[in-house]
Image 1 (spheres, helix red, strand yellow):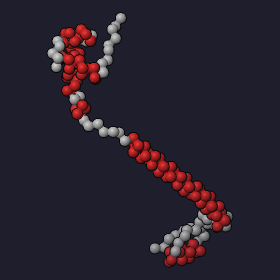
Image 2 (image 1 turned 45 degrees about the vertical axis):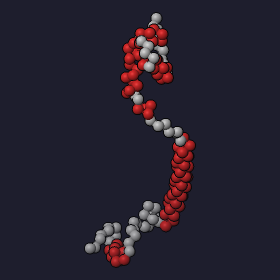
Image 3 (image 1 turned 90 degrees about the vertical axis):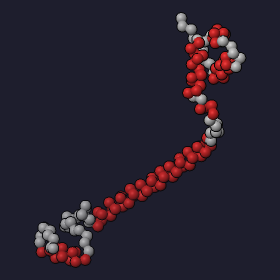
Length: 145
């Protein structure tokens, strides 16, 4: 059966190493008292010096309220955007329905009546030229240039 390893808190590690360094207690005596292997006791200073900068860093209080305020602001902004998009999409669908219904009444190319052909919307001289060409030909379209 394996012996369970004890996990020492950082404060306990400091107390044990301090006893060796300041009070000059031998490592063998400390290891017997605490139940440690000497290699573990020698490894702790190495770990300390590798992570020692954390001991000298200034501890700043974490401002969770500012983060929470920003999250709430962004969520409200997204909600407003979604509402505006939903309103615009509803208007868009309504307009498409209205245009689709009005096309049938006007006889647009999509819903042309049986007596009407496709008539493009033109302005100015091109309109007059095409009208003249169209009236002279039965079903063909030609563009005069």
